[in-house]
Length: 251
Image 1 (tube, rainbow, N blue to C red):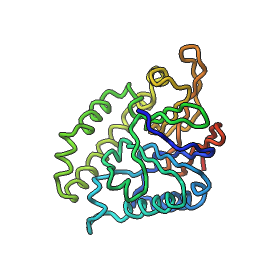
Image 2 (cartoon, rainbow, N blue to C red):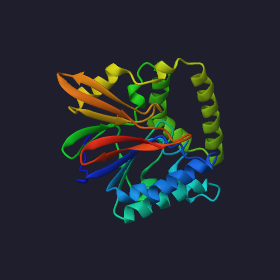
Image 3 (cartoon, rainbow, N blue to C red):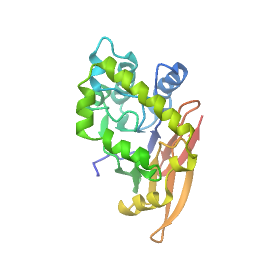
Image 4 (cartoon, rainbow, N blue to C red):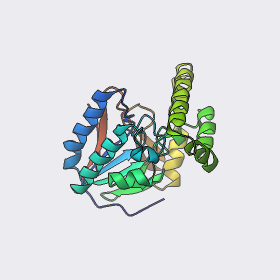
């Protein structure tokens, strides 16, 4: 899917911040990033997993809701009012982020995948989880969790029940990941090549795997590249595209 995006010369991309009250130091690093580095950019793209979990936009207006969501939306809104284009994409942890949050944040919600154009280079933006095709159990769960039926049922529950369910899911996920081969949870190279080919692009940028890197491929006789964003669990970082040239920065 393609939408009109602004013509900019300095773009920043981040993902997998997993913001949570459990890691206040990372939250502060993120707010500092918005006040400093992001202010010097013309566009900021967040490619999923902004939050460790998101249980629904209605939490924004609820007294019992986590105030972190409101604080993050306000910080994005300030950045947007300063003239920086802000775009958000769903991740596997925060796929219930909706238009209410984006309106509060002054941000655009992007489809996954999304094709943007930076200085004439068509660039495929993804969260990256759909590229991990070897993890069949996760892909099956993703299809369930992204269905209207599951989301309607989940969002119909009280906030406290949703929070309890999400925490239980996180614990089960941690236990499963600890027992799995790490390669199964990584991007399948053939899936990455197919995404590049299907969208007729030479550059792919994504997060999800927490393995920051720059990979190069030949796809249909063309030189292509895949950039992987760093996570923010302990350090953090971003990709900067300055006058068309990407650069990976890890704090």
